[in-house]
Length: 183
Image (cartoon, rainbow, N blue to C red):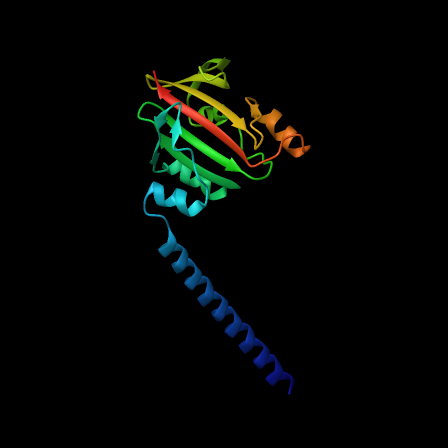
């Protein structure tokens, strides 16, 4: 009788495994079918309304690059890439404090860019930005970034944002905007 019970137990485990595997395959197929086909589809499905204009210029969605796609797969928020024809924007929206919202300078350094002229700047709209120039293989770009919270408070330092958010001094959702423009 013990052998029959063991065999039935093994059979149940195999059936449950195969059933779970089948459900996982169906779920993967559904995700693949629901995958966005264009950058605009990706934004719509993310449930986030990204700005349509910046500094009175129309923004158009761009597809995420390979590095951005890999990052977005692990990022605890949503990510979009847009352009106004002159600048490229990477916008990240987060609902909770996270260390994965890190400075653009870290990404650029990690991708082999040399950074120069790091400074704080104020634009024509009186917004503060943390900016730097990135140089690699003769290419030079100007990168600026800032984070804003739900109340409109801005941060130019990611660590300052993180601790303010973690301690409840800043409430989300937060929008991190990074701009890049060729020089």
